[in-house]
Length: 267
Length: 227
Image (cartoon, rainbow over all chains, first blue to last red; front, side, top):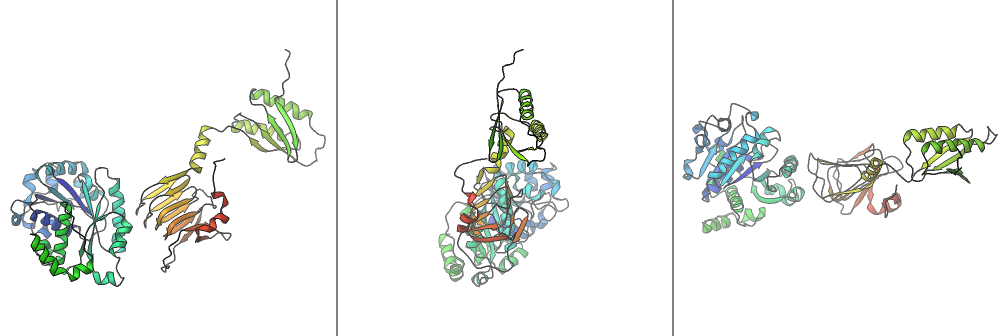
């Protein structure tokens, strides 16, 4: 029986889709069977970031409405032999095409076959959000060190805490610019964690390579030399239950090479 | 029928006027009849004299609003008497519940997050924070053991005596009764002591040291509950 994790944020553009793609890839690299589910019906992106856009035949709406089986709609990522699959969202309908009950049933079905189901949630707190959280056992809230993003994260945490079937959400802080934090122009990590008072799952430094990689349809995790890649791999290890210490950003900056060496040593 | 005359109404004169002790075991009709009788006998012949205040003590009898009104009218017709207070040992269950709700301290342990509203009838004791965008509302006072970074509204039903107390006072807005105050646009320096907010004599919400409340709102001490 697998575990379904919804990745959400409230605010748009903080990196939900990128996080979903990279955590999924990192978990697949760690040998787990992973299924990514894009619930952003009408504005699907996850397939583009994963570079699987042109292989889509059926989508989430087809499955939910019974036009095809889940197995048929799943797109296999050939890079990770039989470990990573994507259930794409429909581009032609909108969020109301699927109900939370249908999503619950679908996720239940996927949980039989996969170790991890990562659900990419759309921005907002309306039907799309409700669909995304319907079948989830666990939630990851992504935010950036901006006041607006933290405010929305707070709102979404409040909503997630009301869900009875979801364990207390955990936090990922994305796109941290250490020089801005140091100069006091950006919220620092302790401040955000204290404010939201939920467990911190990981922090990811701002990295231009992330954008480059998504444009090429290759998750950054596949590039072992980038800061963000290591951060995502660490988060994946924490999801798997390992305790990986959180490194402060300064250390991370100084110790990139040391960490890469350590990383290869581990592998 | 030989009616045994029993004293249903006892009249006592005090320096505050008259106190009428009304028996609580007889029927209401008998009581009204005797009241009528007694007051007619005792009526003074000075119609222009000063108004005499009458305090009614009805013991364990519950008077409906209609009955109260009837007795008030009855006494008022006796020239210079006017009912000032009616005191009863009993209240209805409904009134009791309302009173309980309005005076109890509701303790809640949670973080009030953005978009959430926590509303209580009496006093609120919040064990946790109010985050920006979150709102707490109380009919009475608000005591926050954590940080207040959102909106707090005390004395929601018009009680200007209500206060807001927080360990970390960094609110977006403070409201007490119908008075509102918002945080200054500039960033205030960090203060690490408990603070309270109250309405001062100029009808403004003031934030000050917690210790001042001892003098400003002595009624906050409630060792025992009372009506």
